[in-house]
Image (cartoon, rainbow, N blue to C red; front, side):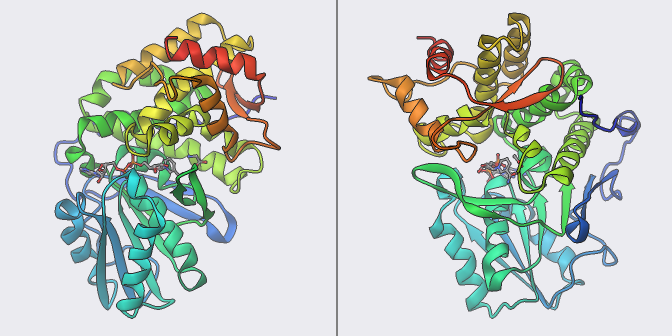
Length: 389
Ligand code: NAD
Ligand code: GLY
């Protein structure tokens, strides 16, 4: 039976007419329906200027977690907005980068919480990309056995994916995102204006997670991305708003049905089995997460082709789109002496693996995804072809 994803509304076309995009109310709100853990994703321009009557989790104090790159750009503005909501607003800055998604950085959050006298009524705010968001969420899940938190994502990747759905984690040298918890934020505030300062390479990395939603769920969205890739890379505000809005709608729909990934949610990992192996194998931070996912989607599409699920035209379609997003499509060699074995051993660590059998998210070329194993010989051929060997 085919899954149905609700159709988008018309917001993308309305956005193009707006001249003054600052301090506007949310252009779009996406609800995420999870019984008593339900929340709203607000998407708009200038949302960092949170009004005093905006519904935030109640608390005695707030701790904004950010990093040394994002804080100089947006921290004071957010703290000013939070001042009418909380008696005290603190902040803590983490070192920047995937290589710092570690116990040591996580502990900096706990050090701040405890030394500042924070308590169960303290609300955490994650101001930054997916690295800050995943670590802040994990800290919120575990500090005093759980305090409320709000995601304020400032990268495209975080706005379309990581801030939504409650996956929180840190990395382990042996595997990506291996230590973490499912823990939902109470609100997600996506200020599209923050994307203005995002480096081009990071914008491209975010586009990987936007592209992902097409082949797994919505072929009309895939067509739209193809037609609007140049506008997205040029940061057209209407195109970005549509991309963030539709991505969040699809993610909310999936997470609403399978919060803890007992089945359907795994489709959101399209490209990630290969991608996580690239990240761990190269050393965290050498390839950006989105770059590894972009290349991983090409590899997963090639595997789908080898297994007879899509044809070579569809592989070419995905490869071209990933390349147009400014992302690498040739996989890196991880081990000159036995590259295939290195990929396979890293992928066996993947959270989807069962009794050592690697599970891949494969696609059918018609907007459906499935999770399946594949013979090692076929996977090795795909790795070799993807690395140009
Ligand atoms: P990131 O958090 O490292 O941010 C990318 C870079 O952009 C960083 O240097 C950051 O400081 C900088 N930055 C952030 N906002 C900026 C802005 N507005 N202007 C200028 N610079 C800015 O990386 P990311 O791509 O946002 O997130 C990747 C992480 O997200 C990975 O760890 C990945 O595992 C995780 N992730 C989690 C989920 C989930 O469901 N929880 C989903 C996808 C990815
Ligand atoms: N990014 C994959 C998920 O949230 O499940």
